[in-house]
Length: 443
Image (cartoon, rainbow, N blue to C red; front, side, top):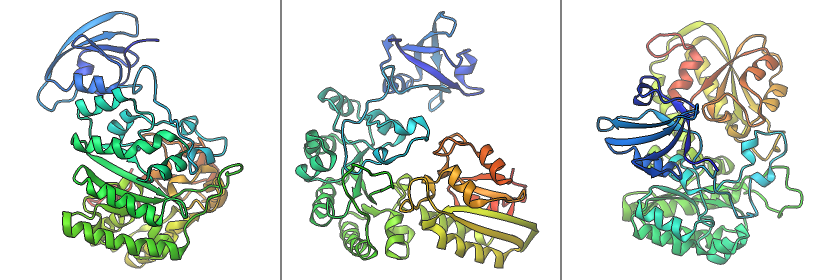
């Protein structure tokens, strides 16, 4: 197997470009230490002076001495996390979302990775079930922090049963070792009615809370169920009453933690508030939004940013009609915004399209799991008008939907002009009116 890490990108104007390193070259070693993975690479180039050993795409061997200022970046990205590839998941979870996915999606979405190096570098959640003693020691020795851990249940028997892996029951001792070593942990609980809720959840929250400040956040998110569950364990979603009861208990936990720790510590996915028909908590309840990418606090943050930008809106714009895409769970939110914006800004017409998820099934309601084909069928002909695509619908740093269709494909299908919008209330307002706050036209 080839050694080292392949260069995937070189930043313009960077040290790497100045050294004539190119995409496709292979970084073999830093300071004569062979690279096994991205952790070795990042630790090696953290110094202000180091030597790179490069095998060029033409097969030449280079040795490059690098000097950089404190905080200056090398400007080089590598292609894979390790020469051997990702560590894969060894679990067979009763609620695994990958096992519920239909064919015809992006190939990488079927990869069941469970790699601690992705947790460190990208914030991916891992289960620790495939972690060797050597790897656990490495995390502690190098102080690789923070880690994002899928806990699901503290009780060893319940966790092993949920994940169908006897090694899953080792979590309490593993997480305690990490906490004692000062490794920061952000925990996730995928909550399943009748399986890890009630007393099981209470124990999980209590035990994780005892490990603060090592455990910095606990996110509770509802199980995701698609229509592709043949031959899988029968599971169900939460009722409105159950979601209300959970949030009532959650508020008591948050109050207790805040009184003791000055931090709410446990946070609930936005979906729970929608299922319960509850108002979203105030910004202060989310502290510093530690699990925003996990769908926890996104709506409250978005609405707060909307309010901050509201006073900057113009009284009128040139006549324009913009179509807003969202999942069915956020329909009421965006219809309220539509009415308010059209009353505020003359010349502006907005249409909300809450797309039903036929691809995965109607029980999947979030925007981030919508496909281009569902959007195309339900939008129809836009007659050249503009439509806004939340970036959560697309692959990171790309224009592909989950079904491997591109934004350009969708534009042709619906005869419209797409604008991709970041998860930011201010950016949303700017795209709606067609101008930045400084008056410059949005490209």
